[in-house]
Amino acid sequence: MPSNALIKEFQAIVGKENVLESEADRHSYSYDSAVLDPVVPDLAVRPTTSEELGKVVRLCNENGLPVTPRGSGTNLSGGTIPSKGGIVLLTNALNKIVEINEEDLYAVVQPGVITAKFAAEVAKRGLFYPPDPGSQAVSTLGGNVAENAGGLRGLKYGVTKDYVMGVDFFDVNGELVKSGSRTVKCVTGLNLSALQVASEGTMGVFNEIILKLVPPPAANKAMMALFDNVDKASATVAAIIAAKIVPCTLELLDNVTINLVEDFTKAGLPRDAQAILLIEVDGHPGQVAEEAEKVVAICKKTGATEVKAAKDEAERNKLWEARRAALPALARAKPTTVLEDATVPRSKIPAMIKAINAIAKKYDLTIGTFGHAGDGNLHPTIMCDKRDKNEFHRVEQAVDEIFDVALSFKGTLSGEHGIGLAKAKWLEKETSAATIAYAKALKKAIDPKGILNPGKIIGG
Image (spheres, rainbow, N blue to C red):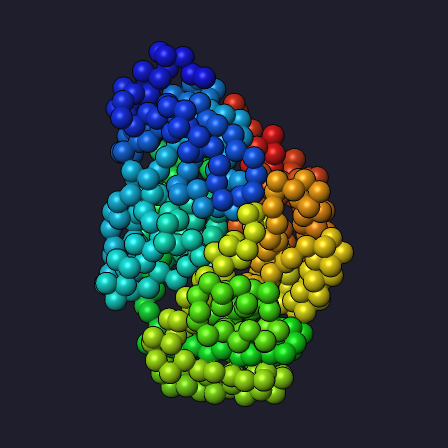
């Protein structure tokens, strides 16, 4: 616990009301959306200006106090659990959209801006910010950059890293480091912006972020294809891509997920389908009409029992609301929901789904699988009760095996949720001992006392 004198120094910087030291407040910031044990921080500190932010980081470093930056805490890998204690640095008061530049197509934001609010503000100007993580209604842009968040539009539009033009951040000494530019091209200096993306707060504390904007598509068409066999749905994904059609969204839901979503939303999903694909194409109206026609033909050729096209915007929204309800629907089934994001090359999706189902049977678990089939990013979701120690031990064994299978298919540990605490133990399996050593040397040089979100990604 920091001394009273140190607490007073924090209060002098940010004001007494922004230093949260009660037990209730500290418990509120001891966990995030990962199924991991909470760790209660010593304090939570909420800067309201850039100047305060830099001073807080400097004071923490001078006192060797761990700093865990936190937006809304929606990450699923334990990235915002203060595993070594210290302070949780709240960014929710740093929530200004500094600039939306309609002429040069960029925006400058503080890290605490809520993703969906930003996307809505951009849309009011006739522009488009494509990254759309499932938690966008509450997640922050700083958190999105720190985790390199993805979303439903990743197949065509990419993920958060594809829209980061620059990041200004504070180093451990509280000095402001500037990287990137407001220009489309910039090769000045080392690519420090890229170093910050997916760094999970281990390499600096974000002050401002420059984000790329794009024009919105002129038209779109959403469809739902029904299958009596998951393999046929998986094969359809590959066939659509092989036909050189890149939908903006290509999502898969298995039978377990379909039924739980239908219980939850009453959206009219077909309960007897073994899998459905939710597909949307966008672009110029002529291109959309042509691609939608081709997609329907491919789905029928690869074995879809039915293809339904959304007739209007209301039906389109209903489809995507059902998809976005997948996680909350699964979370209602049991007290504990373990959501993973093992990602494999698209061609391996049928084999990965088959393996997940075999693992569920082997460990006597209920696993619903949904996800971004178009980019190989699956979310096997285990519904369980952590209080049942025997069952949760089987869950841990199943998760180990899911990642072993994904890596054996040349996949990756995380498509969009980060490594955090949850997956640090597997990192060397995907990379190498030399990779870990290189990352640790880099971290040591940047953060000699190891105060920036310790324990995340590379352990330590």
